[in-house]
Length: 333
Ligand SMILES: [Zn+2]
Image (cartoon, rainbow, N blue to C red; front, side, top):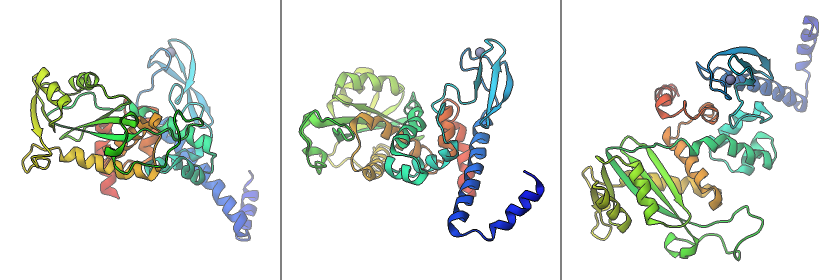
């Protein structure tokens, strides 16, 4: 565009009515956002590897749609910085950041769609893509004092077009009134470094729970739980030190270090957060638990930028990587 044309255009800005002023503002914000998102994703890492052969020997191969392309020196294939990630082939990059903001704020598919100006199908797809890696970012080992407890969710076929049972009124009031065939069991484990993990069991299986605890908890840990048979047997069979708490004896809240208060607080926060969705589909319960885990991991200070970067490279953007970064950001706000 010629300089004189730009001066002419700027002269018209003052005369714009509200409708056209807002359209112009939207166009500028959209352009800024595309550039910002592209820069964020292009520059996220010191080392990029070929998604096909994992080689780090690459040539830069131009920029298309603001995204850096590469050519691998080993396998000679070309790719861009998003190839092989959940963000590949998604359109409307200018709206990704505001969508990540909706995820951060726990908005429903419908509300996020309205806020970002996309349809509900796109909103659903984006949420899945932005969060798919979160189910993988779970601590593999918990150490020290490890608190364990479970929550029962009511089975829900929300969103399904055909129900495998008769429709019922929403909710059961309290988990103890949920019929056993409609219960979904989820186990939560948290150590004192705030490493938290969860598992969903669509069918209760003591052996499965025991083997997962065996994998998760190091043998020199102190395992804290209620006096339930599955936990008692796990600790006994694996020789793990077990601090057993009993609700009936009023031992749930202890004053010393042996307690499960942290996991109970975590569960309460989760229940309060998840209630905004008015029931979640059991099929996606894992995703919701992972979504909340990510929010909690950053003490509710996760940013939309971190959500996008974790969607791209989960192995690099875990809490350890960001702990310093998020503390700096928290201090700055
Ligand atoms: Zn290659």
